[in-house]
Structure formats: structure tokens, C-alpha cells
Image 1: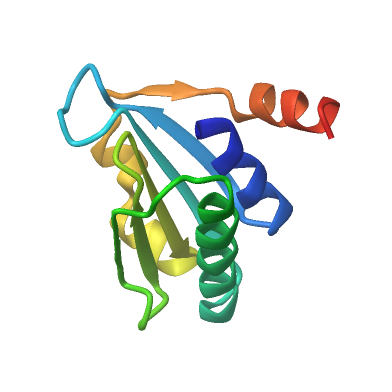
Image 2: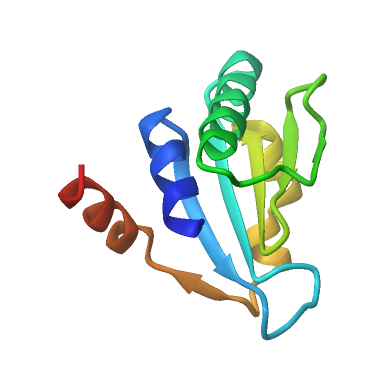
Length: 118
């Protein structure tokens, strides 16, 4: 699921995709994926594409928040929670700093696997 989400975000031109492994410091989820779009329209388009592609793959969205405002869209897939921000909101909330104890996962490894398999 993690690999699929990263590929969809990258294909939809999400900016600065960051993956934090949080399972060792929290029971909320195993991973946070944080990214941002260039506008509210872009964040919604990213969220729409992610929901559609994962649903097609049989991965059910458990909960979604913030879609109407589009400034911070949270998509809960159980083990993975995706945060899609506008750039300004991402800087303001700075989840990477708040969750700085989490292990940062190298996204490039997932993208290389994905593009080698397409």
C-alpha cells in the first residue's frame, strides 16, 4: 500500500513527498505520508486521484477530513495516513518537526521500484 500511495502522489505531481515511520512511537498508524500541492485545486485533485486509484486496487479509505477547505486533507488508510497540504499550511503545521522522532523513509527507493515495474 505504501508503494502504491507514493506512486499515485508522484504521478499527480505532489510536492516534497515525505514518509515517516511512526509505528515505533505511536499507535495511530504505521506511516505518515506528508506532501503538498501548489493550490487548493491541486490538493483536491491529488486526494481525488489517490482515493480513486486505491479504491480500484481494493484499498478502502477509512476516513477523510479537510477536503472542502482543501488546505489540509487527511486521508486515513489504517496503517497509512496521508496528509496533503497547501504549501503554506504545511509550513505552518510542520508535522515533520512535530514527529521528528519518527524514522524518515527514503521515498526515492519506492519511486525507483515503481518506475522500474511500469
